Image (tube, rainbow, N blue to C red; front, side, top):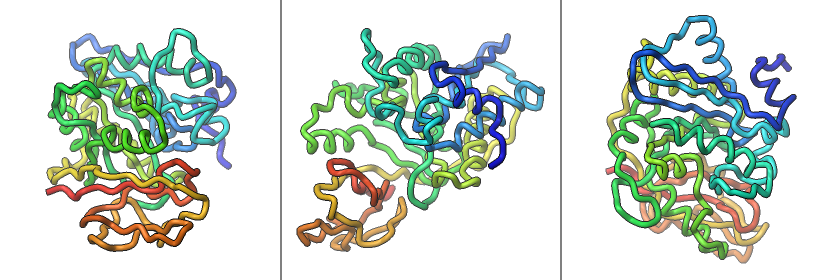
Length: 317
């Protein structure tokens, strides 16, 4: 195995220390924070940002205005373990606590004020089954109690700038259904980096760059980073093609109820299904069929009981 970049090796050697770099141009402009390895086994963002750190340090990339912060490894313990979580999922309850109870709580205590000090967040992730890269945005503008928001247009513009041809909206509303099905109260559960960023007046996009471990996912992450820089006018870089098509909308989630629940085939995210088509089968023999023409998202054949087996989305219209 090739030696890790110094920045990434440092995260493994010092999991109790968070490392980031911030550049501030003398010309005013927007502020962007970019994070990798919120989930420790999703390493494409960490590698992409390590390359970006080199480019900035060597002058191959120069900040022209505004402020830029790169966090190559947001969850060093999980990264060291090559696991999704350190002690728990950092991206399902990203809420600062006055009395941190676990490793991720201590990480959040440091990262939360960093996020709040920026206008926009780009969070670089990957997924566990084959599929096309895609971006995720949050709610449309609303004044509701759960996730009020007024920057949907800026957020969608950021998602469209990242060089991917698939966008999904409406994450938290559907995740709340999964939480209720597990008997949880959808309050702090489901709040991740993006939701926290919006709660602080900013906006945020997650990009799922490809399958874990796929070298091409690093290239997707690097392209997304350059797309964000170009959109915000932070640096003189080539922008990837802008996606102008419609966004799909999450509608439903199905949980694994038994270890014997199975998917009927090796689904990939964004595989199309027709109403009535079998998607999964319960251990009891019950066949779970698509209730409408839609798209399978986040199929997870190894999910734990009580966790998401798959999501369904409506195609963009």
